Amino acid sequence: MMEEVDVITVSEFGRLEIARSSTARQRGFDYGSDFCIVEPPVSNEYDVTIYARLGLYCYNFQKGTNFKFVRWEKYNTEFTSNFDHYITLAARDPSCNSVFSFQTVFSAAGCSTQDTYRVKTWRVLACRPTCTSGAKSVNDNWDRDTGEMPKWLPDEALATDNKKYYVAQESELHENDWLQLFMEMAFLQANPELMASPPLEINKVVVETKEDYITEAREKLHAENAIFYISYKHIGVSSSDHKAIIRKTMDGIPEHMSLEVASEHG
Image (cartoon, rainbow, N blue to C red; front, side, top):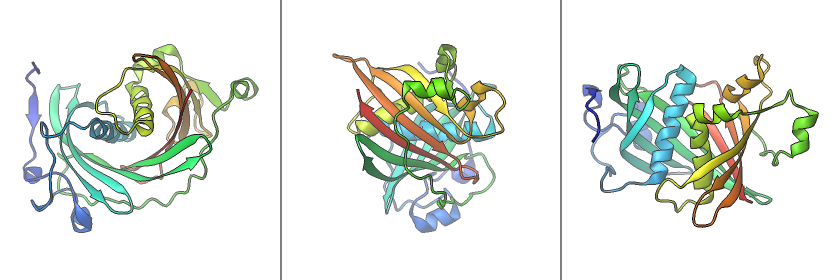
């Protein structure tokens, strides 16, 4: 049974919280009832849970908060040149144990192939609590060109340039639950038919970043622009090893984050 907590309600978002159409985006997240809304228990998509958690991660990263994902409450999708998800979720503030409504716009910006890797670009285009005053428009412009994805990092690279790379410690794999989220995102990208969270286990995380403000190696784990090389295991009927490269990019616009994923089996 879920424990009782205080719930922050926001009247101006009491109608429907998920933005739709270009007109709705210009106004912000509040919109009318002329679009189809998906709510549990009608649907329980695992991918929507991942998208909602990534939006919350983006906000926590940029704002320095520690809000926790509780559940997604409703969402809608829009098919244009991208595949956009407008999601309302419930988040919890551990500092006061209160639950509040949170909204995010998550966009699948396209996919391509590169050698043995399947590459997909996902972007958080908005991430905000609905307790902010008034509706804010969604800036869906992304002008930064990130170029081609890197190849898988060979082991000898760590020995030749250990200032450029950082190997996450075992304790950091447990302290930073968003690394688990990144791993799940990569596995979902390679297995889009997933309906529930799979049994996955991180083996190793190596971080690469060129940001010069970093003074300690472990700070690379929390860089705004970084590449994560994640090796992990799918623990199922028959265990299998996987590799994923995740490039996280910020373009300087609040609430924006780009995640490019390249993954392979073995």
